[in-house]
Length: 385
Image (tube, one colour):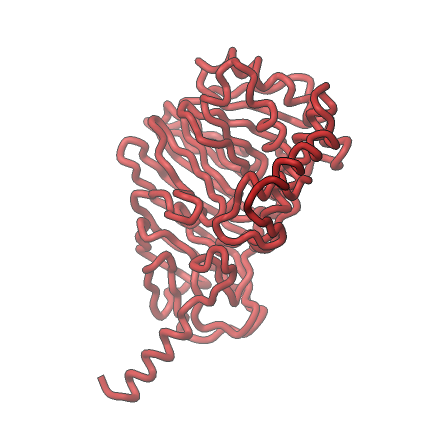
C-alpha cells in the first residue's frame, strides 16, 4: 500500500472509531445521532438458542454524518443493512460495534432511518460486573441489561441517557410465554409458535429493555390502584401469594410518597424457575428467582427495592453510570420507608445503623463517582444514608 493510501486508511479508521462516551463502560455508547424509537421483530428457538431479528431504528443526526456506529455483540451476525431504504456504502461488525458508512454525508438534523437484519446464538456480555444481557435459563430466557447488556440481543445506542420508545414482537415456541416491556397489544398463536407484541410508549433506556421467556402462568393481582400482574411457574403460585402479598400495599405507599406510578402499562413481576443471585429491575418489570419465592417471606425488602426503581432509576435515570448511586440509594431508602410503614425499624433508625456500620469500614466511600467496579450494596446504603 502506498504512503498516501496508508494515511487515508488510518484517517478512515479514526473516523469510524467510536469515542468513549462513558468511562465506566468505555466500549459502549455512540455519538452523532439520537434514536427516538426501536421496532424489533424477533424469532427465538429455545432448543437451539437461535435468535433471528430485524431492527427498525428511527433516529436523527446531531451533526454532519457520513459514518456511525451501533452497539451489537459479536455473537450476532449482521446480514443486511438499509439506511433510508438504501444500502450503505459499506458496513462491518467487529469488537462489539456495527460500523456503517453512508454513500454521502447527511447534514445535521437529517432523518436517519436504519433497518438491520441480524441473527445468531446470543450470549451474555462479559463486563466488570460479571455476565450481563441475554442468558439462557434451564428452560427459558432471561435478559439482565444493566449496565451494557442490551447489545447482546439487538443493535442499539447502549447508554442510559439514550431513551427511546419500543415495539417488541417476539415469536417463540407455543409452550412458553414471552414477556417484554410495555403493554401487550397482540398475541397470535400459530402452528408450533406464538407471536407476542408489546408496545413501550414511555422513553426507556436500553439497559431497561428486557425479554423473559419461560413456562409461566400469568395472574392479575387484585385490589391494586395500579394494574399489577405476576408471571411465574404454576408450582410457585402458593409461595408467591404469601411472599409477595404486600406488593399492592407497597404500591399504595410509594405512589403516595413519590407521586403517581410513572408507567401506563402497569407493573409486572416475573419469577423464574431458576434461582437468581439477586433480583433485577426493568422498565415496568421486576425479575426474581425461585429462591426469592420459597414461602419463607424473606424477600420483602428486595420486593420493595425493585418496585421503587420504577421511580428512581427507570423513570428518572442517571445520565452516566458514575451516578448509579442515585438509582440504588433512593431504592434503598424506599426499603427503609417501607420498613417504617410496615411496623419494622424506622428509616432514621436504619440510617443510623448503616452509618455506624460504614463508619467502621476500612474503605473510603466516594458516592458521586465511586469507580467502575462499584455498583454495590455499599454505595447504595451509603447514598441512602
